[in-house]
Image 1 (spheres, rainbow, N blue to C red):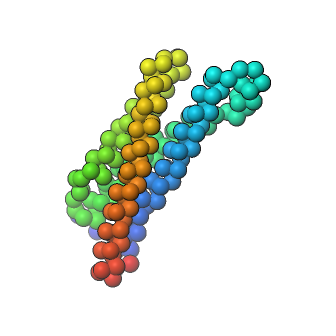
Image 2 (cartoon, helix red, strand yellow):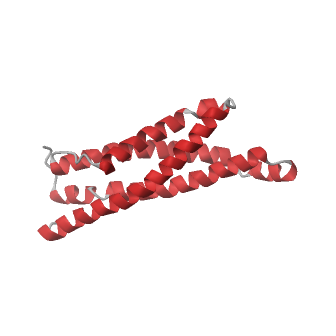
Image 3 (tube, rainbow, N blue to C red):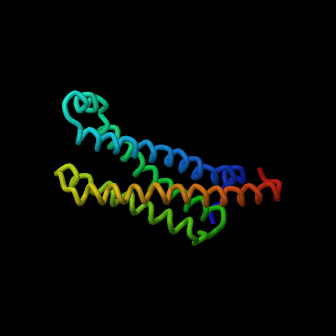
Amino acid sequence: MIELPESVKVYSQFAHPILMWVLLGLTVYALYLGVQIRRTRSAEGDLKKELIKGRFNIRHHQIGALLLAFMVLGTIGAMAVTYVNNGKLFVGSHLLIGLGMTGMIAVSAALTPFMQKGNDWARYTHIFLNVALLGLFGWQAVTGMQIVQRIVDRIMGTGTV
């Protein structure tokens, strides 16, 4: 097992939850941008011209790229920190759902070239995956905070800070 200073071991456990809460917020923002893209696509006349100025598609792609990158890195990082601190991974619903979500966001992002060619099946699959992802993200936030509470209780019980 890798030996790190105790303070690094303790505080590193909070990077993943903080990152994931930020990503949850960004996921809601990406949903908003996606809805605006759909509005733009179906709008006409002056409304369409005004919506195009919002550049929702560009911002949606940029936020989506950040979400993909940081979700993958956050998942790997959390697993690494857990292993370094405990010598094992805790295989449970939080880990398994998190891994599934990481796969879902990768598939969702991989649909982009098909959506750009106008394939409705790709667009609807992308929407379905991301709505499911957002729902699972909310559930992960709750279970993640339960894990954080156990970590804090353990730290406070041992007097380690």
